[in-house]
Image (cartoon, rainbow, N blue to C red):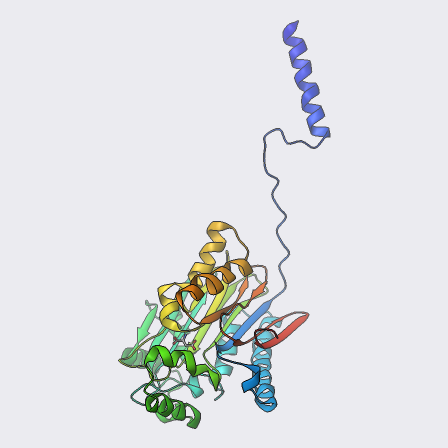
Length: 346
Ligand code: ASP
């Protein structure tokens, strides 16, 4: 009899809980997944001492135009259902072929008066990656990076070996003279004449021209990819290689979190594993992309004295573009949105 009463009471309590919506097992209700945009692409053309007062209206117009063109190239691939990797490759190639960026055609000079180019690419689906450092005759280093990823057993090839591999892959080879631009040459002469140490020069190099380029994309299939290409830093010596071809520092992509490309003083980006750190914060701490990227760029990196920024796209298509310098050439495009920005308060 008592057992029956207890049984009946339990059923009553259970029903009351169900009606009031109470959860008897203390389970936390899962939040609904945010909606993913159809596609998204973010790009940068370098960060640094970019201030409105040092900019002419003409120069600003040209910058906005070339960034817009690069966005259009990548968006066309994504709109037509192409992969994020193909969009990254096409966008970065367009910027490498422009003399305005410190990548491909507009690369800066080393202390010895050479152009040594670095690039990397990463596929967020499977964490495959490829990179080249210090190539001197490859017209589009981003293609060499992709070939390393897809056609070799390695991740990073450098110097003469990377040049040789690119030739064997049938990539377009140019005379090193192809990379000469008067502006970059003059920058090197100024750096040498002022006898600026590498770190001091790092603070001043960005004020006159465009910089390193990078792109991050989400395609219609939900796949993320990122890539970066650069001539490195003016007046670099001893075959110095920066962060741009270092996976986890200059480039990172993971379909579970985000895709990122960095720009800035590479030595800091390498030591702080910047791109991977942002992704890891999202994964381990479950924080959103914008917050994670801000914490690394305007928190850790800034307090360490590392100048620069990142652009990226997360798995839902949210874009973040934080930087700790006065400006960063940047932009993004989604199905109904497009933006090209230069200064902090743009
Ligand atoms: N991060 C590049 C490097 O250190 C330079 C840049 O982004 O401007 O080689």
